[in-house]
Image (cartoon, rainbow, N blue to C red; front, side):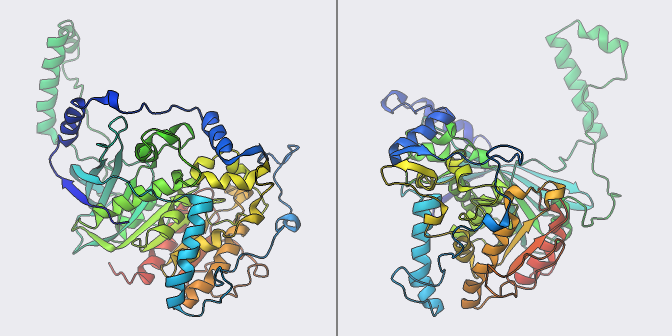
Length: 510
């Protein structure tokens, strides 16, 4: 989806927009619906004609409804829908047939049944560079930019959406750098601070202002004449220890010549049912409930990431052909959705994503389809709720009724390189995430990579026979990569492996 992007470089554009909005007669617009989490869930269930939903399993292994962790019961329908067989039964035998026939079929089914489709009337985004700061991160001098993406709400001024993103790039780079966009909460890594002389001026002015506001403070400052109310924050020393594999991921990226961008999902769409009539989904729907085919939060976050990429394509500090997407847990799901549906992203690091991410939906191991249909179905299209239905106008359905699965999502990424990361249950990356179910999906998706001239894990594509390797085993020789590290619910321990892998597959040298 191509969007028109305008760039406002003047501070104060937000105030101007607010002033303009204040002149609009808001009474002519329908008031946004306000749902509780339970009300939104019930509304979608009613729209779909579902009478009874199966409850999701408990993560407590001693509970009566504990999740299944018996591998012999994990595959009630082991045969996955064949990636390379079209809807009319033809085998996909060429790249041309993939791009023209099979990929569009998979896109349509994945949108309709799992993630939701983008509406046609999504408004444009205007990016503002709010602050540019020069800082040090460990030993690396950087340029940090606070960015705000103002979404045009002129069609429905009752809802504001401002995308929050931070871009940090090494200041001493010889040219544009690759960037890893990460779902998370943006912040300046090490804000530049006033020197001692400027700090004295600030303190003198601040004391005068405080005493003017409250004259009794004069006696307090006289009592402590050397005290300064404004003090320096702990700074980053140039003598910081060298960056290594245990350093924060952001430090490793910068030391390797990469930049990173952090984009805030909550500034795009709330991570709950109640927010479904707000955020970008609510803005497009003018505050009204969504339909079963509409996009969910995962697709909305991915749309926001794509709008962030719109900005990065205009920044001369960024090599926009080498922008990757990263996320862990629910944001790992969002990273996969972003990579699958937005072809401009060059690579992805998908961490511990579970159901709705790289793990097979039809697998019954730990987190289940019912966990999402009964809880976080706002992540998905409303239609996804059908697969948790026990009684409904269309009968009973479960994950085995899906005509697509997570291996198809990985196939949509092909031939672009994807690195799938997990930790181990013993360190907190729980069995609930079904690491093996993700490995099976990566193995199955390999047929598409090979069809398109790329490389997969280097094993057979028999997802039922291939055994998941022991943790800390590198499977990094192909465009599809897998590594289960010996840490917890994070992809941090794999960053030292992702960077050289990404440098190779993206042909980047510092």
